[in-house]
Length: 197
Image 1: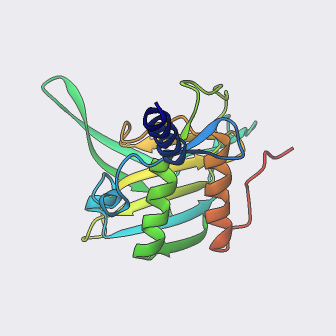
Image 2: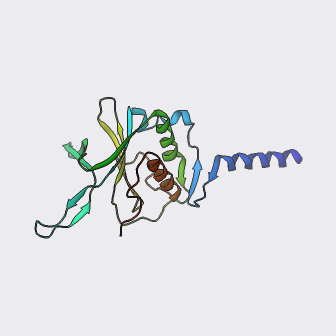
């Protein structure tokens, strides 16, 4: 009986240590794969370089006389139609509005991978925000300098956009947003983390 009780306690300790709850109740730290395998997961496995970017791109959505500016994505997608379906050919970005950039070294890339893949929401669906005003991005480059993936971030709206879509959970919990902000600030990014009045 004592042995059974001891075994149950050990199992509980293992479960609790595998899922450390962050101070933010909507997040859980869950090691989904060994750290040494993180950089072999998409988009890290094909990336020769990872770059953090901040930018402010405005686009006129009104007329010449009544200009209405909105915050726009820095990404332009180029598609071709094959067999009646759209296929993404390339992602191009406008660098004219970039404010700051920083290239991550391999250790920093591993820390980013842990942040993106290990911190997950405790709820299945987090409340959606009806805006997307991206001013930060994480760009993944191949050995030829071609962008293979982009993660656009709207800290003000707590929203993301993946290019191509679907390579990770698009629901970020508050703890992940706080850690991403900390990461950007660590490398000298100081603007556009709060909603503007």
